[in-house]
Image 1 (spheres, protein in one colour):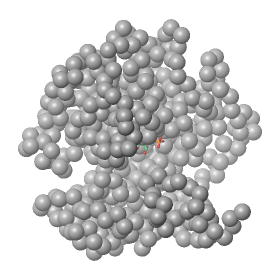
Image 2: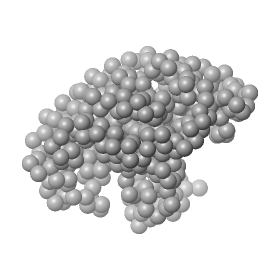
Image 3: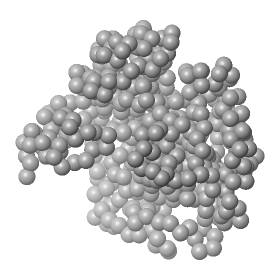
Image 4: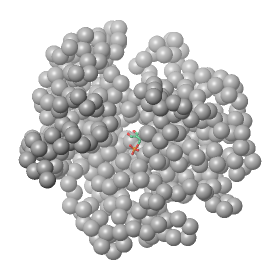
Length: 447
Ligand code: PLP
């Protein structure tokens, strides 16, 4: 057994394949405890978790009431399948709660174990929906550059970065990528209004592919991994109108944006649009246990469940312990008013970042919606050239090592998604920690 801190770190290095980490990397940060917005590593060092784990710790770490809900459920019914006619009381309760919280018309729920599974399910639902309606030629999916939809073959084919395709070929065919909404990068739109440009491109692409051949558009309402890209307010209503005109489904990948992160239960409500399917995971349980849920439009569900029913299921669909944890998590979000808190604390953090970082030459734009924030890094404010990346000394790594504040790098931006319970003192600590490093970051990326 590996008991000392150093032995644990060595065993991690020897045994665990970490995503996005070369085996040659020496450093490991092995966490052992969490409470509120803080986590502690095996050496006893405390960190301020400004990424909320991986965009998900809405209620913060270490809540005893969640552990108790899991324990109670596990002692009563730890598992039963949701295939065929079987179900369990917790899954039913959670499905009812989710359809109450979601937009009108999305009255059905399909459970998964996480976001990647959720996007696979949504893509298959979209094609199957059209198949059932007698339009099997609707196979194409519209996605966007800089999108992230997880690691399944469907989702990663829809991802908008070459990194997720290189070495994994052949990717799933019939996926077409559009320009992302990113107003700060006005050069993408050649001087045109960003929404006008993007809607024209969408119409042109639909005409090119053929309107009767497209099943759905899969999109994050706010692109997370792509750098927290916030679309102009008129973008989603106008996209919805175009898709409706052509009978194309809209799938919102709300794996990051749901459950209060934007200040609404779902970003769909924030933007005032109703997608046909919403994919969620992460904040549904605040990460206490893996669970995903799709909110499915009644018109879609009707097609999926006709005939012999939807021919696709996961062993863990509607897992009762995960559902019990999600119900407790949602109760806490509601009881503690965390939607309003996300707006208030997010605005406070945004203002703190502006005050601490706004004058620095390498800080291009600070943007936020609720408790999703990004600091876009550039060589200088005039040219807006993306700050060069030095993999061995990335700003977010240096910030963590030197100040104990954990932020994340996403495509030349530092992104923040702290627990929604963040307090003003913690917000101050995040801004100060980032300033310590960014104030000496040079235009060539050297720190
Ligand atoms: N979709 C989005 C927008 C995500 O950000 C992520 C993960 O970060 C996923 C899907 C994949 O979810 P999971 O890692 O739970 O499979």
